[in-house]
Length: 196
Ligand code: SF4
Image 1 (spheres, rainbow, N blue to C red):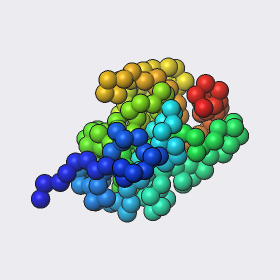
Image 2: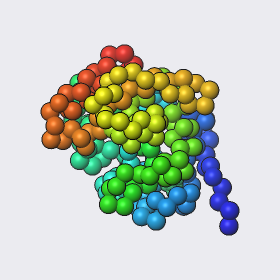
Image 3: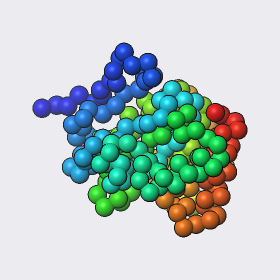
């Protein structure tokens, strides 16, 4: 049976922007559906001016159905707390809503299949923080070294709107790396000072 591609959030829920759409719970638009326990949809303030976009759900996220709640999420929480940025005031999401097997990076095809949902989440934002390589590959088309672009302003077009895009390290890359952690802290401080 042909599957409807888009599925609206509850229309009577004011916390969700009207243009935001989500996959159906049984979405099979790409092969990542095979290993899914739960869809992992955006969290935080969905109407925030700010979106953080990570790579993909990991095991804990897949089990709980929430983004950035595993080891990387805990580090991101700590850095946000240290820098005085309230996580509930920004939106946090991923390029794909289902966990890739063995935590591999999502493929171009998988990110393309899920992009309609991501775009609807990002529409209307003033700034997007791209956490790590997959996010920068999906949204910027960037394939080079993260170190060359971290905290250097870029812009992307989401539908008819140009949006500031700040590339930075994924928290997973910061766990044992002081330099990456400092760079991610600097990104968070800037978001706190200029956008929240
Ligand atoms: S990753 Fe996105 S497109 Fe692929 S099955 Fe999951 S929700 Fe659907």
